[in-house]
Length: 241
Image (cartoon, rainbow, N blue to C red; front, side):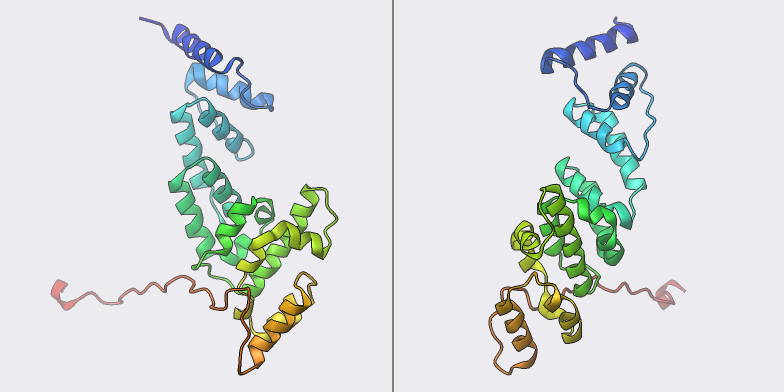
């Protein structure tokens, strides 16, 4: 039988033969941690390196380490990092973590959308969030959140964060915001003055609020349903008394 050292050397040799070179991650500490785990099975995860470690574990098919990373992420999940973890869980195809992220985002949507992490997500994840029927948040908050995301995306692409560039990077995501579900005051004070909408869009939304014959809009008009209220009974049924 192979002793542990020989077995680990064999596993690393397999990785080398499969991938040519074991370039685990640009951060040397991640590579060192990964190889140490291969030799000792010791797992010491940290918030600032867990995603990189999960990437390496997924890439090199180290399932036990990947499960440990996902478990660590689930225990550290909160509103301020839920959107980033949603993006990563979709990338890494971790459906249970994805579901946990959705539960947090739905319940604490305003905190999640106002977080710095929201501005770091990819466009497909942004679109999925904006399509979410169960977000428990005012649409004015959603609109301000996408402006923040668009500003950050412009900078990532080397663009000046002007309104036309923000509209360009948002693409169809802009039309997933339910602008008509805002109050008239919220729309007038916010989206109508943002310069990200065309004059025709702004005009038509004002008509939608006030005119008897409402124009057809390029935005969803029904408000989000939000979370269903949870009911609990103060007293048990008499059958159990």
